[in-house]
Length: 348
Image (tube, rainbow, N blue to C red):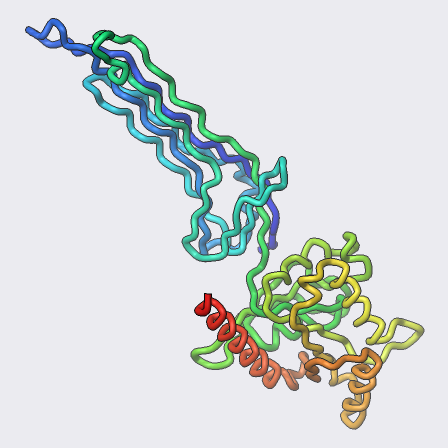
């Protein structure tokens, strides 16, 4: 299914029911008095995060969502029935904005989490509410208030532990295929990945993490070139970035692996400081394209020219060479992150 990560919807809460004017009329009770009941409250509109929905694609075809109107009041002091609320299922990772102002309303990241986006109208009052010692037979009532109506902009950010960063054809899709059961398209031309792919990497029976492959980034992505601007934001939730570099020697004057790597780093820094400061490991891919006796020297030359002092892994995603140690190292790193987060939260 095609990944759709943005959608605009209209939500309409129900109006409050009107109060009514009514008088008690029973045999042998000539002065029964007012008994008009209140109306019911209008139903509200909620967004609910669920694991059963993966994209926002359905909102392209069903963009208006309404809650039920409150029932009008009835005689015998009977209050009208409250309107049914409207619950809209959205994927985990959905961020909700007010479309007109751009104000962020909420962020749904936990299964079952609900967010009120349009409040139902308040009920109107029946004439029984206006009875007093000086007004025994009031005919005064009030109408229910209008329910809120809003235009919302929804954005879905992929929730993953690890994000793959790199130019088109760096081998990101091949890597996610080799370490998980995800099956993104792989071919020898740029932009085979047109939407994010998620894969679950199972290190053992009890430990696993989620890895995300986004479309390749090109120069100018932070300003909207290519597909990078649309999907760079998906990396903001990850705990670790893997910068995948194609180490295959270039010919005919094409850019070198180092030049390609620097382009990516530059685009990430332009996009956001937060993303640029995330933990990032260098993954030198396609070692199968270089002679075995030349791999170490070739990779070291790239590391030295980049001035890289962080973590480095040499792999062949196609041959699944070096991928297992990489996955175990990632799992250990993520567990350390989670432990540090739990400790910091316990201190608070």
